[in-house]
Image (tube, rainbow, N blue to C red):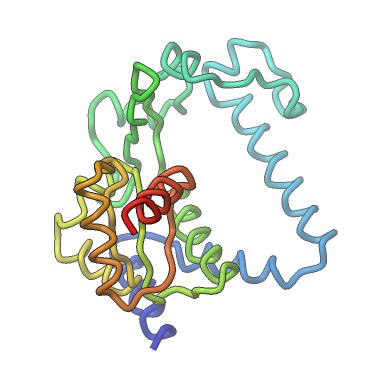
Length: 228
């Protein structure tokens, strides 16, 4: 049944333009490869990324990084303040044009994601289609490593504003969550009343796994202990 769920999920992803299935297959191949082969792939991917960034991204070009021969230590650490101050210049020209005109080439493309602003000011970043595919594949693969493969029912105590706001937006989103076996719990709502509701819901549900931010999981566990 889990294999059927995974197949259905990846087919649905392909229909919207995602290549998460291809990324997941790549992760599984790498997991079976010898360590030196994995290290070589990692070095090559990093080298190509740095080469591309130093040649294409205005922020890095302005720093005078050696195009084609830049090392990771040549790149400055991107603090939240630095990202906010140089937001547009950290975009590739094509992405910047799309961002400023709000025209995307396809329905499944880049999305703008913002932090919760708990430190005083939200910070935005762009997730392009490749990043989103890699993230979906990595989550599915990490579930395999943690002992509950894709399709195994699990609770997701999550703090992604985008996920929470769009939890029930469309049939496609709801079908995706159904195939994934996901039960979403809003980590932005962690008052005692909400946590009691979560615990009651979890007690009635057959799911026995959870994906969560560690601090939120700890807060829920401490509340469960206090309240018996």
